[in-house]
Length: 177
Image (cartoon, rainbow, N blue to C red; front, side):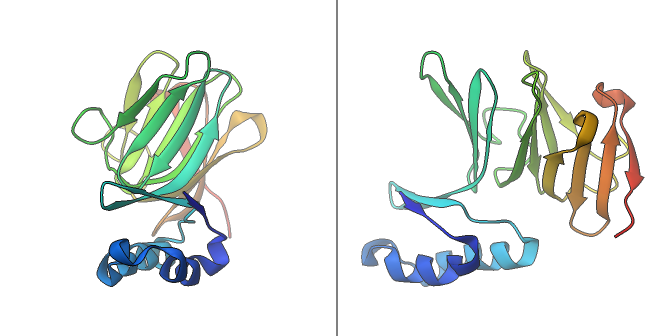
C-alpha cells in the first residue's frame, strides 16, 4: 500500500511502483483521470498484477467505505467483514468511485462518473439524471454541507446543493461560483 500526496501523485506513482507493475500506459490512464476529473488519488494497492487505487473514503458508526478505481469496499466495523461491490455484483453505476459523503445517521452517498449510489442503512438506491434533478451523471465530488445538505460537483454543470432527506424529494439549486 502506498499513500499519495495528491499534488505529487504522478511523480510518486512513477517513482515508487515496483518495476514489474509499472506499466506506463496503465499509470498514464490514472494520471490522466486524476488531471481530467480532478479526482484525488489517495492510495495505491497492487493486487494480482492490477493497480487498485483508493480514490475516496468515508466512515459511519457502522461502516468504513473505501472507493477505488475498480469498485467499492464496505467494511463492517463491528465484525470486520469486508465486501467488495462492483458493477457486476451490485447496483453500483460505475466502478470508478470519485467521492463518498456520509451523514451522521449512517446514510451514505457514493459518487461515480455515472451517477450516485445512495445507502439508506438498509439498501442501495441509484440516483441519476433519469430519476432525479441531477443535471448530469458525471459526479466528481460530493460533500455534506450545513444541515445535512449535499454539495454536489459535476464535471460540466458546476456545483449544486441537494435539499431534503428523501432521495425522491431532492431539488438541486445552482451555486454561483
